[in-house]
Length: 640
Image 1 (cartoon, rainbow, N blue to C red):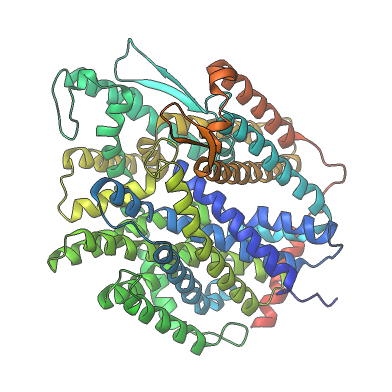
Image 2 (spheres, rainbow, N blue to C red; image 1 turned 45 degrees about the horizontal axis):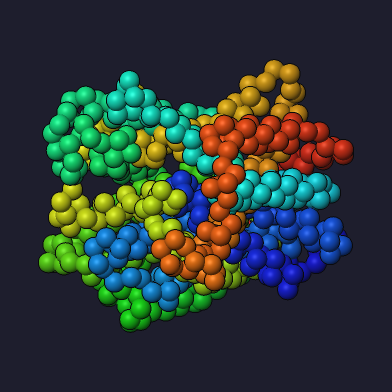
């Protein structure tokens, strides 16, 4: 049966809307906890609900195009928020020039376009010829969801319910301030330690999606720092003032110890973990790079080669000549070289382990170290050089993230019979829309709370900042950083996943604890002996869809609260300044329920989440795995 056209007005509008929504939500999530999640499946599910049940149309190709454009926004946002906030922090702390809105958008646009263009010539090799060898777990899962179009309404309803419940919860907690979003307990008899949990829907969702093992590694990292290292620092430090601290350790709270010492240990562990992952992948890098150079070609189903080469050339020249982009000719060449290298690696890595485990941060750290070293060798170590290093790192990071996302989306399209060229155009549309939006999102969040604050810790960007400062010769506490490095080495020796453990060391214990609650729910599902395998798969899917909704809901309300925090009202505060809308709706002075209320609300959230995980559909879904595989083989034969 002939399908409706996939690159339609409806698919473009919906896709752009999904790109902005999930891009903003993931930006907030990444700045909050240092992690982002794939938007492909929730975007596809929402699209099915709207196109099939609202517009009364049925086109799997339109739905696929919506998720293609929508997921581009999430990937571009991830690359931007892992690096760009460092520029805002420098502007605040060290007097650097504040990045302009145009600068942010142009940097993001360059990375987004390059990420798509670099991946296009690899499609034939990675998607078609390697079919059956590279599983592309998330791309295959998204194709299966798209195949089950008949249940799209119920699935979309699950996502929207998660979004709505999390949005209301977030507004009550951090808008009305009726209960704290962070529960904290200082253990006075074990000086230097503290425990607690961030009772946030997005954290529970992240823990459920990432799984029990990742969540357990993160909480283990937090346990090492908050319940072992910090008490030892307090015990042995005594009344000494030890750099980078500026007060006696005996006078420090657990948060002071974390801010002055643990962040550096965690940063060293994360940096080492990223580099270790690259070293372990070196044979794969060499093989992929060699195959990519040999197969650097496109066919009639892809964008023409002259468009790809011409586009790369135009972007390179634009990075060099446009004053708003702080990159010179050498920097542009470095971006092209590293961008192509990491795009090839990222495109294959997501095929093996999925986007969630793609070591984009490790690639970015490696690029930042090399770029910073080159700048330092040439005598450039001032603010302009540091800004240039972060800008180059940002573009490389976005390139890697976008290439991986494009590869995953093209695999989904391959399985459902989409037109590759139209999907590639869709990716470019998503990159343009997201680049235009990300500057506004970053400015809004920075003005409302500031990066590096308790509300937006921006952990990944903090690590990138430390890397550049360290290489450029800043006054970093190298013993603390190397302590983290050797913890990462030890973890690698004993076979513990380094990056999630290291991220747990770097983040506050409370964040990892919130993620662990989601991991525990996933454990209940995975280990249940009362559920059949089919039922268990259904419960996992329900949880992932509801989690995706919760993550999006919290992120969107977080953006809303940021807007309310900067809108002034006529009402005056005690100091005579105008109060913002956010301050006016703050009910903490009259209706704050404290930690008890927080536990009650969080328990209710967990109960609702569990209900939607285990609820049974009225109509059983159709199993389409074999159908998807069969059609993929037919598509492969057609393309061959």
